[in-house]
Length: 180
Ligand SMILES: [Zn+2]
Ligand SMILES: [Zn+2]
Image 1 (cartoon, protein in one colour):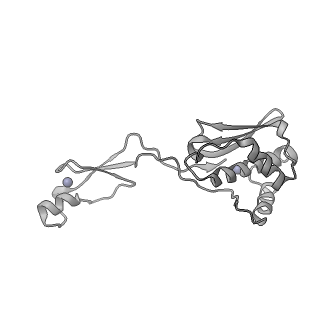
Image 2: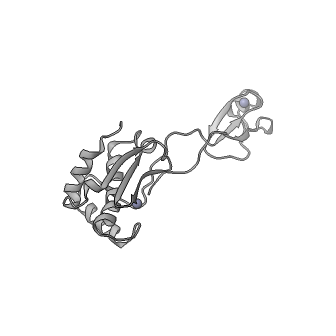
């Protein structure tokens, strides 16, 4: 999906889940281009809260990922601006989250929901010195020989001569995005 315009979504969920209690005039809703490790975040500066959603994490995903992340951050805003509780994912947050999940809408909110990070190169590259092929791998595998070369030169049997050389991909980034 693309990038959703956030105010209408905010108003819809503020009505559905929070009885319009979250003060829109004390909240900023922003898309962040730079936040790439978390899907969303909430923080407050002075009396104004800010919900930031990650453009790189959420824009490639289905709309439901944006909606559930927005509602997750709205719970933080509600805990802070309405309930005046100083907590992260504490009892106040959890009670509201469970209340929302019990309503049986298409949204499921969780404390730790991991989205895949935007496509990054596989962290490892396996290189065959014989045929020159380079193959991406998620993890290093010991004793792996080039299948093409084993087939071509060794009747399909494994041979030490065609062992793949694993190298770290220089641009690889590991890890998963999470909700803040
Ligand atoms: Zn090879
Ligand atoms: Zn959170």
